[in-house]
Image 1 (tube, rainbow, N blue to C red):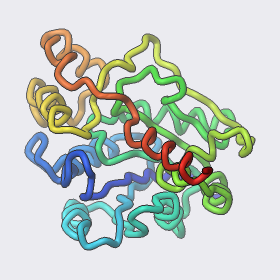
Image 2 (image 1 turned 180 degrees about the vertical axis):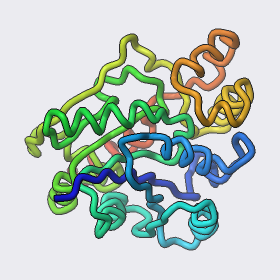
Image 3 (image 1 turned 135 degrees about the vertical axis):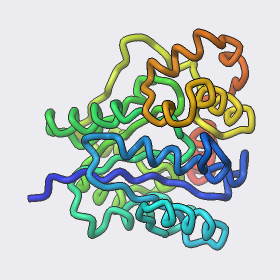
Length: 256
């Protein structure tokens, strides 16, 4: 029986708020490369694949990631759930980790905690985002291959197809779920990259430590930078999960 964990990082070039963001420079390399190197440090992850689309707009992304030495799967642009299912197929993994490519400061320790919690408690799904206690940009979801396959077959709503995991969290799915809580609430911090000012903040955090040190930094290293530069706390004030909230509006339109 397989006991392997696959991290799937979703990314595309056609972001509406900051197009091409995943190939913008961060710490001397493309932002997506910075993130993938941090994911590689997770001890519980056996393999990594970038899941992007077959659209021509993502050709440069796929080529860049392959050149970095990482696997790439290309699937549907808009049905991200189907893309995930395709990326997982044939990779001999029983546990999957979902990450989004606009989170370059993702913490390997949180990935390990999520995977271990899922396995230790024999759950279908684990997240550190409900309740949200970690900085936006450190979100991790872990789930079984069986949970993904069932979701791919049963999920229908636009938000469920675009954001992969809402069906797993829904009451009708009746999946065994778990959550990771932080010691303190850091959810007001924003380290994801959706807007130009988000990228400015992330670059300042990385540059303050130095690119190589930042690749190995943990949550507390970045918090110490914020202590020294409190102005960054007000530099990128945006609503959390903007894209998901937009998808919920599409769900309402479908229902009516």
